[in-house]
Image 1 (cartoon, rainbow, N blue to C red):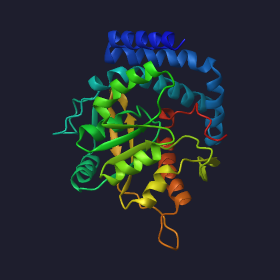
Image 2: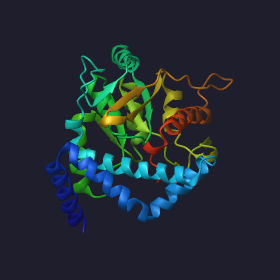
Image 3: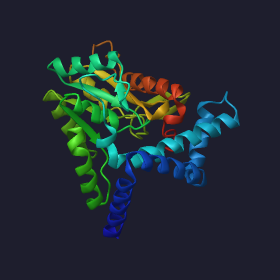
Image 4: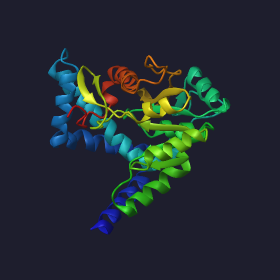
Length: 293
């Protein structure tokens, strides 16, 4: 059965490559908008959106869900085209003729991180195309290591690793050894990133979009162990198919009376930044996840 799934995935990748970097994402977005609302995940998305924005009406909730499906379909079909979509000019990251760009503030922050001789911790969220910040870090000269989730199918996992590794630097598979490998990477002066906006049942309880949920404390734990800066990064979809990359200024981690990083509070601070991003562009977040179980 695994070989059959792997063959199907490879066929889909081939077809997406054949369609090209412009057509494939548009088709993916259209398919997701049409079929997404027919799946059980749509009910999860609608419940999450209604609970997070109770002041909005049903039409607005449905429109956010439609945008979220559009973004998911687009992001999935952009996957095999990341090398083509990535057209940021390192010499002039604000070029108006490029699909991917960043602001002068973000450009300077990337340069500062690359030049300071230290490692850093960088959190991200499932917003817009959430693969691009990792591509950006590697392309802009940061020694980067990224936590990623490995597919269960070994053949599919190998294909995806071959796609990602040339663009994203060191890849750390999620699992029991991930915290140790991430700690070693930070200790070696690398810039370690991970997505922190999904449920983590054993994590501290925080408030996110008005409701309590469990959050992943791994990055906060690493912040407590290593004296390195913490930043947030995201991609934002803009009209005309453009994508802006953002990197926050250093986010100061809250500390206990003893002077150590307060892990639950630090976890909440990172998620508060992400909450602001979601409120700014609600249609670009992955609402289909059971964050509040």
